[in-house]
Image (cartoon, rainbow, N blue to C red; front, side, top):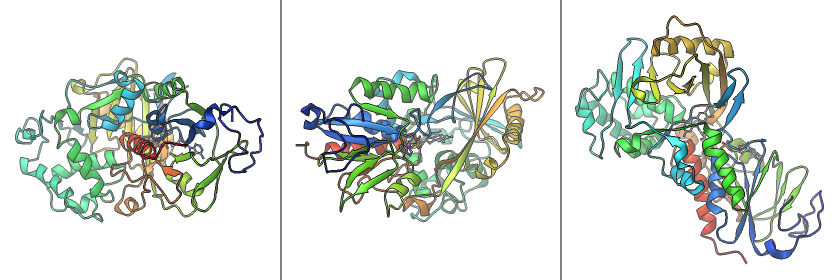
Length: 452
Ligand SMILES: Cc1cc2nc3c(=O)[nH]c(=O)nc-3n(C[C@H](O)[C@H](O)[C@H](O)COP(=O)(O)OP(=O)(O)OC[C@H]3O[C@@H](n4cnc5c(N)ncnc54)[C@H](O)[C@@H]3O)c2cc1C
């Protein structure tokens, strides 16, 4: 409890197990916002709140590092820093760019000169590049050189059906009757990448906002952005540094075990070794995954079904450049789905990968390398050193049924807010969704009357 304005005991009569002498009254003038979880949602909430509205921010994180599902670590096999998984960021991610501007880290992202998406079909060997044009009018669909082989311009209009699909519709059901090439080569890879759920199960209502905000907004919105050094160094650590510079308290390696409630508010937080009583102006933001939130808050409905993402990283002998310097390569007709490259490391993502994640890491590495060898024209090369990362609960299953279980920012308890990619943002479970949820919770708090 180092660094807190008031000791655990004394606020609401709750007795912390570790008693401390009361601190001077300076910070007793301010309210404290406790944020649980230093993933992107918690970081975004904290950076939005810190130093504003007379509130002090304390960020508590169970792991010894921040970042949650968006993190980097040093890998011994590859001998370098890698991300737990490739994270595609798009020009149409305003919440994330706002977060980066707040912490002064926008320049840590890099992007190609234009939004170009090269693809390869492993079954036929065909290669093509999708090139959305500048401006809102999508004339690229009329240019055969910019669109997908086997498609005609009217195929792309079938995407509009997502806009009018009922809440219960899946992407596949909304697109029923659309021609195969456009489904297999555009809508299916897009659904799996964005929703981490198969096209047969993924919610049409959740894919539509992404289509509208990217392809519906022109080239700049579709442009992919990449962390230059990695998710940790570029998105997470600058956020933590900013918070500390603004006087926020960041506690790593502390797991919230239990909440104590009175009738309509949270009274205290139990971390096992220390406890915090909440004063009348204090707030709690739970920015933890849905399963954790559901355990902590009795009766909370949350989307608990999950889908896996598997990433395979390969260390090559030389730096790798992908076609057209695009930074990524889409793959259809194999196990691999998206290939990314950073320096000597080629990283491959497979989303909606629950079945794949059940296989051994060696099997997965070999299976994916077969695809990479074809896609990058390295057929005769032996499989290089590799690391497979399985994230079995990468996101919630973004099906129509699960959408109805997303929690609102404000729940039933007056001083308890929720953030996280699984809350009801109207966006898919992505970095953008997570950051948006954190900023939404912060705005919610800032709109409340100033503390006493
Ligand atoms: C492999 C992979 C690839 C992905 N690819 C993309 C992509 O390409 N583009 C994209 O935009 N998104 C992608 N995502 C999704 C994105 O990473 C998540 O949507 C986002 O990071 C979720 O952030 P969050 O803050 O909501 O949750 P989390 O990151 O899960 O953060 C929750 C935090 O709470 C902490 N916590 C849990 N329980 C407790 C407790 N009791 N006490 C204290 N702390 C606790 C956790 O340790 C964690 O740090 C990917 C995810 C994965 C796993």
